[in-house]
Image 1: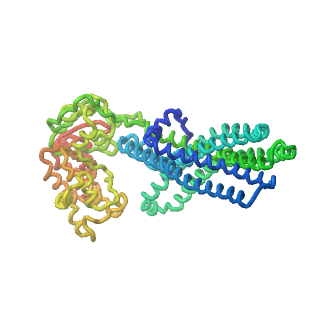
Image 2: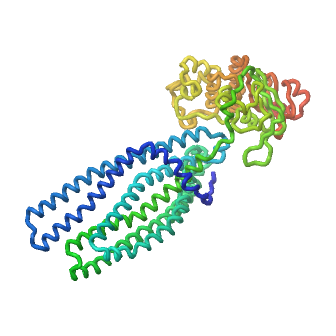
Length: 594
């Protein structure tokens, strides 16, 4: 099981205004919460800015010899009360603003899930599970951090820096100008490095998608891997993917490692200038010792916003990159379009399928999978036979509208299938694929998927029709037996029959079984076929199979080859005239005689 060891090159990020449309409605919805949160944050910043003033009063009173125990206790009490207020208000803004970021994350997660559930098969053909999971985990986490702590740090840095500069300028405009001399260096570095950070973080997310998909495939295929003793090779390939992911993260860390030291260097350089020139100002009497202490304290407050530039830039770039990935996923539209809502949906007056010159090419392929299919299906049991790759499964997928077809090629109940909503159309069909899909629940839950309110009596009835009830009854927990992920605790034949029981319980007008009896022995296959026949009256039943004994019980058999229908008729007619059918019959007869 091999995967590419490097992620593909990054896509260009969508315009900022397109990304903001994803989140601005949530900002409007929770505007009161955000307003209160930022008010609490501003109050915290204001209270922090008062502490240097108290220190200035205390130092000046000590320097002037006017300090008493009472005045110092008063200054200490003011600082203590301010610190307690800061702690309470900090709790408020964290609860309100960080809580908002979690609500935004929940909204995006729900929107992603709704979008994914609406997508069609071509979407899942081109998007791996690992990639989708990366969107729902790492990407959402990055957006949450950017709109939570990132937004708080940005607002806090702007307010604190402007306020600190204001109070510094009140003490000494000249010393303030000296202190900000190194700041342009920080602005230049942030501008240059932020673009690289977006590119590298996008690569990190893509590598994470590959790593997640590889791990998922390994877990799903663990029995196959062990059966072919591929554990060592899987470990090696996983290690290579892990190294690629690590190297991508290291590149991000290098950029981050440049931002933070530069910010610290700028802040400390400013502090050095203050200590030198501010000390000279104190000696010359231009500012008092208390003013100098307050100025240094404000400069310490200014260092945090400088350092925050690197952190906020990192969070913002990660958030925007992830929001861009989420935007691209949400911008993907299904190829299967719903009909115009203003036009009335056709009524289903008769049960019939009709293909008229049906052609089909898989998305991204140039080779036709179906060519010029003319076929009419009416109530009864019909079979489809043909060599491997002849288009049998493709025809089933098209009939169940897993892929789009052009207008005028496929009709249901006399109306073009494109005029029906997907829900209305699919409600008419039960489909059992070649690889039955079971989820990790009980047998009963798997059978009643399409009819959750089904009684145990109904579940047992269809299980008997599918010839699986006897085996279920011998299990320790019977219908409450947990089947495991993808039905791992069941045999292939048991999974197929549970899937058939599920389709029979849905009791829809059309039943399509795409080679879903292949894991059964001939005797069990005939029992299942008898169960299907007993409840098919008035319905269309289409069975794809390679076994001619099964097809001999159908009313008509369709022969396909290279995406075309080359013949159709009953079993005896095809045996008499069709070479391909005769060849299939001869091979199966030789196997039975052997």
